[in-house]
Length: 332
Image (cartoon, rainbow, N blue to C red; front, top):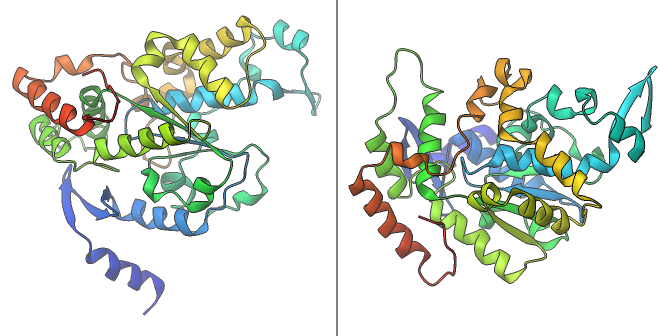
């Protein structure tokens, strides 16, 4: 029996549920698609963290793309490279200031943030021959949807840093519903929201249960605040400048002036990213949908357009019960 057959035999023995008419398999208390689970196991056994790695983490649809863009700009802002006559040179502050309106130097103009900050179990380790990431320059910037319990020990035990973003569960579900409907064929109608709601409340969603995922990282952030930074999407929307400064400080790359902060916020703003040509017309090769699907509304409170009063009350009660005693408020 080869390794592929052994893998299929192993996955067939796992608990199985349906999510958006696709099978999910439960491993370690969390739900995965088959190829994500295979990749997650590969990440766990093969990924070797460096002490200066930066790992972004999130449940599905909680602000991942925004976080990727922000952290990319925070990390790379001191090494902005321009090309002149085929030569590369690092731009000093004066040169950068003169060209700050010139998008040529901005990687976000050329590609979706996911190209630069790849998700380990969705992009990197799903390849038949995973790329050799050992040669990447430091600091390496990766993302994962994996729960904390599924992370490789090398991440947990190294000095690498984890930046996690959570979101109100109601907005998370609505964003998830719109996103996965983009993957349905024109012949298919949108997946019934009531069924999606029931799945979510029962903990059955990709990389879920949602509350277990959030609480694992929340608890780790309390135990090791220098290791895990816990962010909330709502805080990032309400006080973008303060939260971006917090991220930069946590990553040991503090800003030297307010203009730097403003520039990062502008480059990563929802309206700018949504209207960049690369995000209007290109397709994500890993997920197979338009880049525009990652930029819908970006607002807080969109759940009010989908939830009935009964749904809202029901999920509120689940949220309060799940978070009881944790000290975490998801602003329901």
